[in-house]
Length: 169
View 1 (cartoon, rainbow, N blue to C red):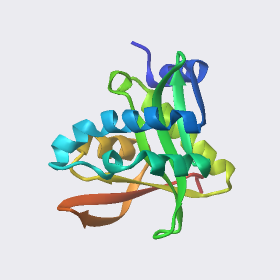
View 2: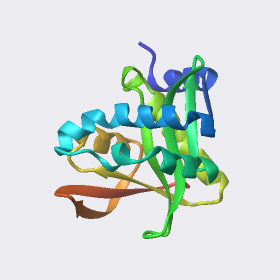
View 3: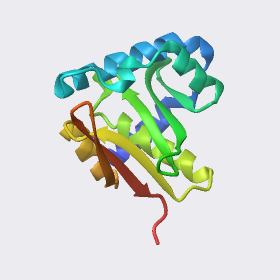
View 4: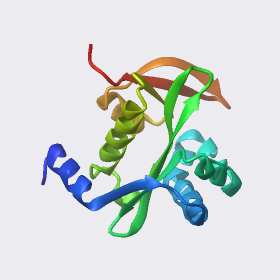
């Protein structure tokens, strides 16, 4: 089995990440709902990402803040990069990878790419939100170097705001 570094190199060769187009809005909505469905069982309710409308996705497309991830000419993931006014930080959000490609290095590659895009904007920190109930995802973000800096309760679930320094001091 290839190590994590080799998997990242493989994804770099095979995956394409680009700004999403309006024609993709419906497929992006389906991808997000499908990827977030397991979280519904963990939370006992639909997460916000599943409730997002196609029009809201189109708005992010128009702002050029949502990105599509293709692998072998198939839409397999998405993420958004936008400013979070509450914390005055750039946020990576609405991250979704199709189930069959989870735990294969694509999520790591996707996050590395998103973080590089944030660096190219001159930002020193980035944040992401996740539910404390989703332990696997919390551990993934911790492994990626994120640390919790704030938390809040939303509809009975603890939401963690996690940040990462993009440059070592």
